[in-house]
Amino acid sequence: MSIDSTWLLCPNCFHDLEQISDRVLGCALGHRFDLAKSGGVTLLPPRAPRTLGDDRRMLEARSDLLESGAYAPIVDTLAEAGGRRVLSRQSSLRIADLGCGTGYYARELSAAVDGGSVLLADRSATAVRMAVRAVPRATGVVLDLWRPLPLRDASADIAINVFAPRNPPEFARVVRPGGLLLVVVPSASHFIELRRMGAALDVPDGKAELVTAQFAGVGFAASQTTRVEYRLTTDARMRELLVDMGPAARHHVDGGSRPDASGELFVTVSVDVVALRRA
Image (cartoon, rainbow, N blue to C red; front, side, top):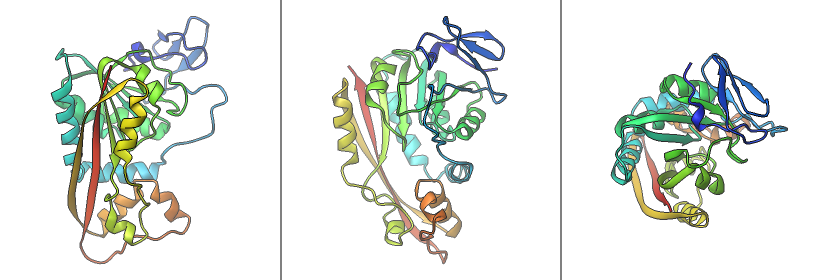
């Protein structure tokens, strides 16, 4: 069972976790955590909010869309940013995907930069199970990105955060000095055609600038922001996937609009890849 405990802290007392047996992790104070059959572990704090993260429908839509290659330019830019800016080229780079979803981005980045130990972290247990299948030797952890993370200080050479919640103080603690954080956020043009139909949520302008400001306050220096923008030729099925893989899916379940099902349509994909260096 693939668990690299050198990533992990106890969510109760924040002592180091170690492997006690094939199926159990534990800390020096006696807290114990069972490994799931899928190979991951749940490390939620006491009285954690009952948030579930992305559901199976959203994740399956995301997997279908990503594996089609529709977002390949985004992952290519992530891989280029990671490979170009890593200071040390040791063969065992430690990569943390904070908000891993299906594991697609971590899988591709790890392959591009000769990643060694990979951490896949998400609030959704379904996401972690899917991600561990995508990156078989990775360590999968169910955790709450909004709260103190059960991850060791300076444990990541590279961390990625793709369309996911951000916790700047904790990300700064987890990324080693000189390490790299890559954040992907949508621009105001992202899915603009679907938004005009009422099928996608609005995106405020200036998200990349907000990210840079947030992380500057906790010791990250902006390295470079790269705009990735292109048009997808979509049919009805792809438009359904684009909507169902993101937060707009919840609004449609509650009676919101669906994308127009007729014919082909160009849909703009527009995101910023923000590279930040840990001081």
